[in-house]
Amino acid sequence: MSETELPGVIERIHYASATASAALRPVARWLASHSLDAATLTIEEVAEACGGSAASVNRFARHAGYRGFSELKAELAAVVRQALQPVEKLEAPTAQEGIGAWLADHQRNLVAMDSSLQQERLAQTVTRIVSSNSVYCLGLGLSTYLTGLLADTLMPYHRRVVWAAAGGGSEQAARHMAHIGAGDTLIAISLPRYSRDTVELARFARERGAFVAALTDNPTAPLAATADTVLLAPAEHRVLSSSAVAMVALIETLTSEVLKATPQTKAMAATLSQTVLPYLVFDTTSSTRAKAEAGARRSSKTQVASRKNGDGGGRVPRKIRNRS
Image (cartoon, rainbow, N blue to C red; front, side):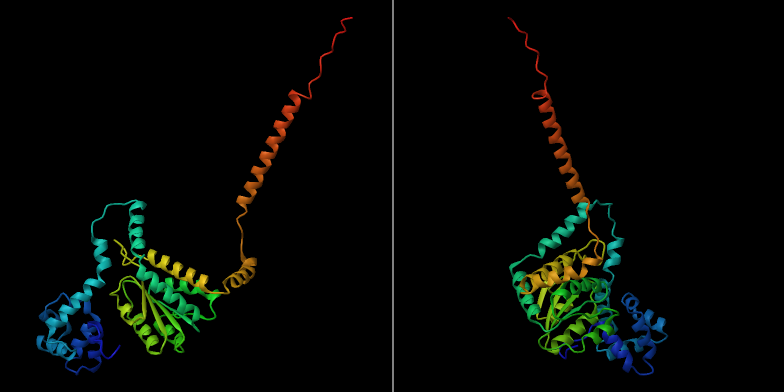
């Protein structure tokens, strides 16, 4: 967390809990573990739930940096609205829809991705990736799988690609990023609901001198403020917390541009093909069908030629009567 940025309400509650007095600890413990509940309860109900008093609840709120419980509760309510959006989407009445309606939603996200500014930022990011000593790919939660796709696609074509969260969560990612620094690039992916640790690790990488590219859904997303450049993949979805369709398209676009900009790509691709060849199975159906169709055409031509010969050259001539 930077010195100029205030922590969010959840962080402030946890920080304040660590330094709360003995009299305030029951309030601190309850609020730290029931933050969502506190957003909907009165101060008297919170006091009863934690075994304290309304005065002690107010004192803890002030200890956390607020003017009182009312201000703390208002900030909690804003957080709760974001956290519960997927639940509210599921509660909304919706009719059964066909695949066309969902594809139209995805299409809107994909179209919104295209802009001249996005193209400039993409080119800048590609240049940095190609020239980087190491490329670190970071994503937590559901974004872990998207980051795996990114890292797996880049690995054969760059000298060093690190999938930061492979094999574990935030702690493992921090270990893998221990040596990140100037000359390196971090590509961080974050979609709703956003991971706080992704933001913190991206900030760490930038402080160490690495170039940070954020792949997220919105210019106001928490990750965007920590990055040198931001590539956007709109993630609106009527049921899920976010859609990954546009992000997959952005990842494929980014990696394709990197491959095109890497001078040794063709040689690398040939080497990769040779390496994986023994492990592949091939679809020979199309070639077998083509051979069968070619054979059928040859057979048909032969039959036609035979019929022609039978109608003409193969006819037995009539015996000509001698009229003498």
